[in-house]
Image (cartoon, rainbow, N blue to C red; front, side, top):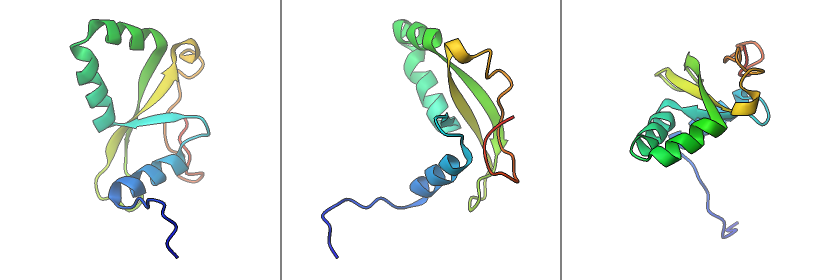
Length: 102
């Protein structure tokens, strides 16, 4: 039946779903592409760069291959700066549990 809702599909949606399945609830994860786009955007804007670095810490989770994708890629966790010390050792991918952690 036609519902009038948009239906999203394709490799980007599949990739996002695979990554979301492996992240902990509430965890924000960026792909390397998003990380570098954010870097480029703030590189030319000192005020924005200072604001972001005073609020968040971006920590590499290493390079990982998601199921159904041929190429491994690096992922980054977005951590509130106030929680940085608690999450300092937070890493990615317990293959048995399929979740992102240390």
